[in-house]
Image 1 (cartoon, rainbow, N blue to C red):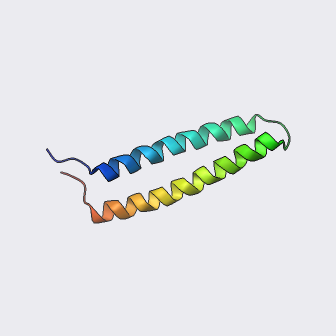
Image 2 (cartoon, rainbow, N blue to C red; image 1 turned 90 degrees about the horizontal axis):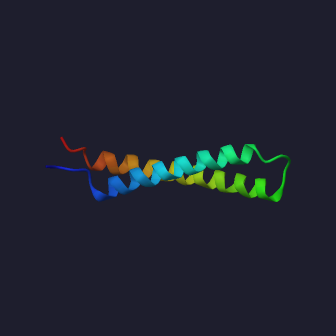
Length: 71
Protein backbone atom coordinates (compact mmCIF):
# COMPACT_ATOMS: atom_id res chain seq x y z
CA UNK A 1 0.00 0.00 0.00
CA UNK A 2 1.42 3.37 -1.00
CA UNK A 3 1.33 6.24 1.48
CA UNK A 4 2.19 9.88 1.63
CA UNK A 5 5.81 10.60 2.47
CA UNK A 6 6.80 11.31 6.06
CA UNK A 7 7.66 14.88 5.04
CA UNK A 8 4.15 15.44 3.63
CA UNK A 9 2.53 14.02 6.76
CA UNK A 10 4.67 16.14 9.11
CA UNK A 11 4.03 19.30 7.09
CA UNK A 12 0.29 18.59 7.07
CA UNK A 13 0.04 18.15 10.83
CA UNK A 14 2.40 21.00 11.61
CA UNK A 15 0.31 23.40 9.52
CA UNK A 16 -2.89 22.05 11.12
CA UNK A 17 -1.59 22.54 14.68
CA UNK A 18 -0.32 26.04 13.88
CA UNK A 19 -3.65 27.09 12.30
CA UNK A 20 -5.58 25.86 15.34
CA UNK A 21 -3.10 27.58 17.67
CA UNK A 22 -3.30 30.83 15.72
CA UNK A 23 -7.09 30.71 15.78
CA UNK A 24 -7.19 30.06 19.53
CA UNK A 25 -4.70 32.85 20.13
CA UNK A 26 -6.75 35.24 17.98
CA UNK A 27 -9.96 34.43 19.85
CA UNK A 28 -8.20 34.88 23.19
CA UNK A 29 -6.59 38.13 22.07
CA UNK A 30 -9.94 39.68 21.14
CA UNK A 31 -11.19 39.28 24.71
CA UNK A 32 -8.30 41.27 26.21
CA UNK A 33 -9.37 44.93 26.57
CA UNK A 34 -7.08 47.78 25.58
CA UNK A 35 -3.50 47.60 24.35
CA UNK A 36 -1.87 45.77 27.21
CA UNK A 37 1.60 44.24 26.89
CA UNK A 38 -0.01 40.79 26.99
CA UNK A 39 -2.33 41.62 24.09
CA UNK A 40 0.57 43.00 22.06
CA UNK A 41 2.61 39.86 22.79
CA UNK A 42 -0.30 37.66 21.69
CA UNK A 43 -0.69 39.78 18.55
CA UNK A 44 2.99 39.30 17.76
CA UNK A 45 2.75 35.53 18.27
CA UNK A 46 -0.43 35.41 16.15
CA UNK A 47 1.35 37.30 13.36
CA UNK A 48 4.41 35.02 13.42
CA UNK A 49 2.24 31.90 13.47
CA UNK A 50 0.50 33.21 10.35
CA UNK A 51 3.78 33.96 8.59
CA UNK A 52 5.10 30.51 9.54
CA UNK A 53 1.93 28.86 8.21
CA UNK A 54 2.35 30.74 4.93
CA UNK A 55 5.95 29.58 4.59
CA UNK A 56 5.13 25.97 5.49
CA UNK A 57 2.14 25.96 3.12
CA UNK A 58 4.39 27.13 0.28
CA UNK A 59 6.92 24.45 1.19
CA UNK A 60 4.13 21.88 1.32
CA UNK A 61 2.90 22.94 -2.12
CA UNK A 62 6.38 22.62 -3.59
CA UNK A 63 6.77 19.21 -1.96
CA UNK A 64 3.40 18.08 -3.35
CA UNK A 65 4.31 19.23 -6.86
CA UNK A 66 7.54 17.23 -6.77
CA UNK A 67 6.07 14.16 -5.02
CA UNK A 68 2.72 13.04 -6.50
CA UNK A 69 -0.02 11.73 -4.23
CA UNK A 70 -0.32 7.96 -3.85
CA UNK A 71 -3.16 6.30 -5.78
